Amino acid sequence: MNTLADSLGRRITYLRVSVVDSCNLRCVYCMPSKGIRFTKRTELMSPEEIGIIAKAASSLGTRVVRITGGEPLTRPDVADIASELSAIPAIEDIPLSTNGIFLKDHAWDLADAGVTRVNVSIDSLNPDRFREITRGGELSRVIEGVRTAADAGMRPVKINTVLMKGVNDRELVELARFALENSYTIRFIEMMPLSSNVSFQPGLFLPAALARREIERQFRLTPSTQAQRNGPAVYYDVDGYESKIGFITPLSGNFCERCNRVRITSKGKLRMCLFGDDMFDLLSVIRQGGGVEGVSAMLRECIRWKPDMHHLGIGRTSSATLEAMSQIGG
Ligand code: SAM
Ligand code: SF4
Image 1 (cartoon, rainbow, N blue to C red):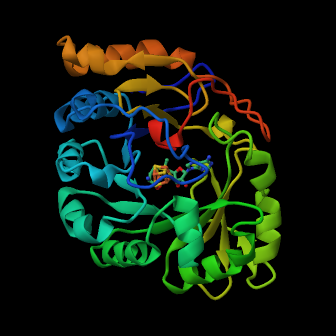
Image 2: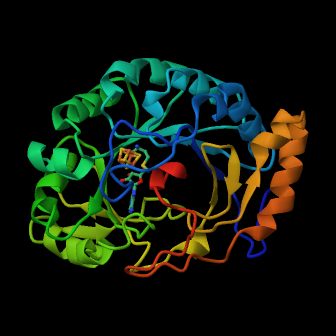
């Protein structure tokens, strides 16, 4: 079978596409308050160009294409992107990552266009703290957005919470309860160092093991036997609830050996690792007429450059180019 696998035998079945690098929010851990230069709208990939990349990847075994950003819902043609992807028979799953602010307005259209499920960032249930973390976000809109996505049939709904010591560590139980009582999955993510946050990341860093201990004061967790282990999260079943709690441990528990993904930046560059700086310009291949064939040849050629692992540490980033997570899409 035609599959894309790297020199360690890791099969690539999952593509994350950052469809835009700008955002209507400015979360403190993701980007600086100012000074970032965003890609011009005319330089972003069109829905058709994203479709060409996804077709090429699907011919080599990719089955999941995530729409991420920046904030994907700031693109007026985001449903067209989903439609391009859902027209590719081999793509089985089209998840969306969003901050949720515009989700209420888009959820039904996106579900109709083929978006299967949604991940929404919620780092606090306190509206003032939420506004501070996101530098201006309105929590109530996000919660309405999440509810609408669930009503529109997106399943599972996942909440992503970045762990921050002294910021949201006292409300982890509350966040877990909010998710469990609404049948959402929640994942607690260790804050990763980027060049824009590396000065304060050590002060905010909270290891997932401590977060789990805190949550276990209220809920009985047992390692989940059902959850898939090809993603970064380690999942736990929770006594009395149907949904799960996950922990993503890029720093305290490296999961690179089971990495199944590559990324496409908002400028149409193939990036083999979130924290690997080698990038290959797929958009130029397309704009020079290379089509699906040209892109799949490039994917095959470049996969050997996928690094074995990242080399992050607390207060130490391993990418010189990654200034804001929004550039790559998380
Ligand atoms: N705007 C969308 C959102 O916020 O979900 C999608 C893009 S965002 C870059 C994707 C994910 O990356 C979010 O869950 C966000 O919390 C996470 N993220 C951003 N910066 C991070 C960091 N420094 N460490 C850990 N996760 C981070
Ligand atoms: Fe925007 Fe998402 Fe980054 Fe927050 S995490 S600034 S919502 S891209």
